Image (cartoon, helix red, strand yellow):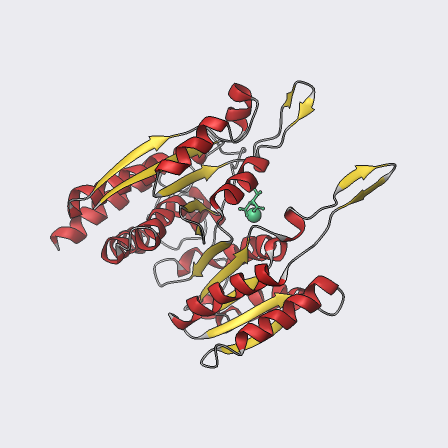
Length: 360
Ligand code: IPM
Ligand code: MN
């Protein structure tokens, strides 16, 4: 298999975690005899410094010649450019738009290997296996009008029927490959946009009689994710609710650093760890690269249909964690008593586990 991948390391811990993701990808190349050409582009705060734009024209152009994009993180505090403050996160919103990736997939699973890293009792979270399917091209993130003027500020939550149908279908299709259950999240007791969302999703559900379907209010979901997380299989959300609930759900696995994500629906898939730039620990070599490495696994599976290779990455990560190795964000909660490993150390262990798995 030949492939071309655009790496966008971005800011903060982004470059550190992508370095390890790259090593894992290179190990996969070597073991399975693939060739991935990796090109790099500028994005985020550093791109603002150099080009005055968080998603420069040159980077936009690079996306058209690749099969997939792997992103580290963007979103360091904005610096004023020509007197105007540009938020690096805007680059990410524009990138999702440019690629047309409306479905953001965020799997959250507490396997035996990581159950000790969770702040919850093992018998409460063992076996949690859910996926948040978050709409990421619409809603209040992009809705117009928006603005701040004359002492008022406003944003607009807006969804068309077509936008709701396509993300709902993505969720139901995914559920068919899993435990066949979809929970759609809304605030239909208050918001018109949610009343509409609930009606359209309900309509799509009728095309999927084999899937167990229900709607849940977002505030209740926030509680249920903690009190009874095993009930969830596929959680379907709009843009903003999914942003919030996925950070919350990350606590189940012990660290936001563990979570990968994929944004799909367009021609070129976008893969990124769910965590941000983590400025408080950037440059120290202690960030958790597992979210980035599992994002590589999602890319192998969803863009390149290399299921065996994707599983190998998962197994490698699982083996390392089961042996009690973990970065500082998890080690505190781990029962192993081992000292925390560095970002690079974690990458190294996972690469070694991959090679060992290959021989074994
Ligand atoms: C995420 C991030 C982004 C989002 C930000 C950086 C724009 O929080 O991917 O969850 O809100 O979508
Ligand atoms: Mn977020």
